[in-house]
Image (cartoon, rainbow, N blue to C red; front, top):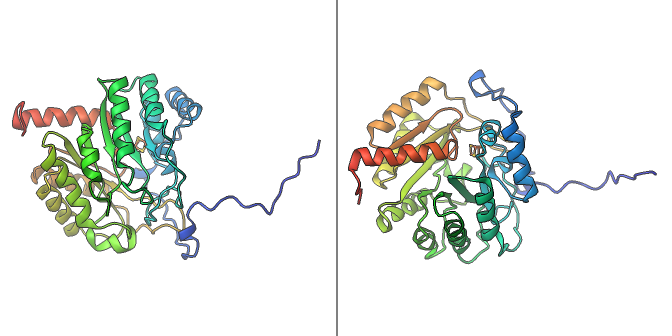
Amino acid sequence: MTTLIDTNQKMPVRHPEKQNRPDSEILRKPAWIRVKAPVGKGYAATRKIVHDKGLVTVCEEAACPNMGECWDKKHATLMIMGDTCTRACAFCNIRTGLPGPLDVDEPKNVAKAVFEMGLNHVVITSVDRDDLEDGGAAHFAKTIAAIRERTPSTTIEILTPDFLRKDGAAETVIDAKPDVFNHNLETVPSLYHSIRPGARYFHSLRLLQKVKERESTQFTKSGIMVGLGETKAEVMQVMDDMRSADIDFITIGQYLQPTRKHAPIARFWEPAEFKALEVIARSKGFLMVSSSPLTRSSHHAGDDFARLRAARLAKFGANPA
Ligand code: SF4
């Protein structure tokens, strides 16, 4: 039998909006960034569950460097509402374009997967869905409700888009009562126009502030990447802004460039600098700080959630409101 391969047929372009950008050199990673190739049995088991169930994970879509470690511990971050994002951030590896319609069975299927994976803590994120009237807020709420119904003891962390220009969307998600509401500021305000052009810094900050105003017991969390050209003073200003929005948990990690078409790395911050940022952030009053080259917002999320609860208890007692 002869198999004919059509060599003219091109793979769909993952980031069409970046095709005309000039290539930039990808810097060699320093020793403290290199991670081991995924080989563990747990990794293979998680991979099988994820693929057998047709789940989309941000771990794969964003080419996260921690996949070997996280998947080995059966920790994956599930991504709902498809694999195609309506924004075009310069740092992100998630496919961009016009997504398909929502899968109405997805909340139920995600809940089933959480049950079958036996997760005590789950992180659910999504692509940006600017094409939907509510930005996907109701779908988030339905997914939270479905998980609560199926596994009431599982704690739920969500990592949401900014719901820019979607009136009432944030309230819909807050009222679904996730345990942790995470939305990443991603970078310092001076870099928004080049790194996160579709977003607005103060809108993102306000979203997190709104969570606390509406549901004071909901934990809030936000993260930034460094290495995109920001200064230390700017990072410290972001910390202050986050504290004025009453954000509980800050994550700070090194930006890694996914392809030559993405924003270049300005520099690698050294481990000692991450440690210094951690000390500064703690002094500013965050309940939890994770600052290291490989920190990602969902890295160690389950363990961190337990620590977050303990930190609140130690600081405020049983009633934080
Ligand atoms: S850090 Fe988050 S995105 Fe990366 S592999 Fe772990 S769970 Fe997935």
